[in-house]
Length: 216
Image 1 (cartoon, rainbow, N blue to C red):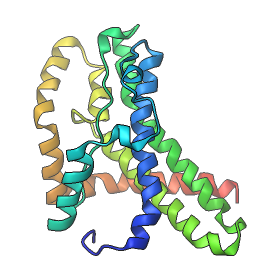
Image 2: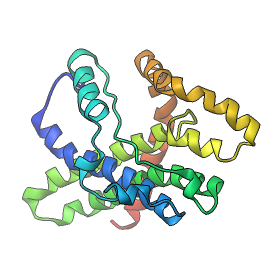
Image 3: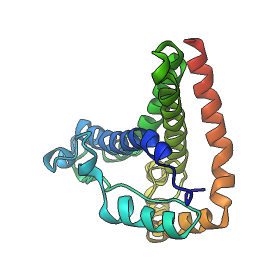
Image 4: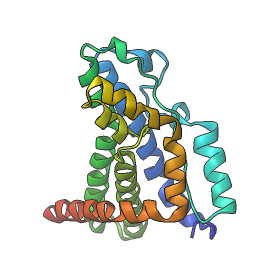
């Protein structure tokens, strides 16, 4: 699917992708600042400028190679730097910071759903591109929410779960982290990741459609 490059699809999906990535990472940084860690702010990561969040390998090289040589697409942004010991409450701070990124994607999915609901009311020439862009926005953010909430470190879902664990259990759980990315890649390439994620993605799309339908 990804090997059949369509410039129109690329252009319509570009803004939703950039917003999904940058707002997600900035949300982590703002949550960290709220709980007392200003590291992201000091390093210029509290911004919606996508350049600040691009990882040359994870955001450009890996997705490009997978796009060219495989039927899959996978990548990541540059993580926002966080120093948990700066938090007023370390456990609560880590919990809120972890969930902030995925929640921003859920909010953006709903926002794009509202854009889709109002698309029929814009001038005719803008209706189709705006509605298609909104559809990509809903889908991309639903995918990112579900993917990041998978309880495997170093994903946000893993860090969220870790914030609830007792110290000894947390130490054992963190041993997964060096292998977490490989686990996700294996699940992706075997098709299991899609099977795990699709019911949740579909549920979010139904939820967003219901909310957007209220405003139509």
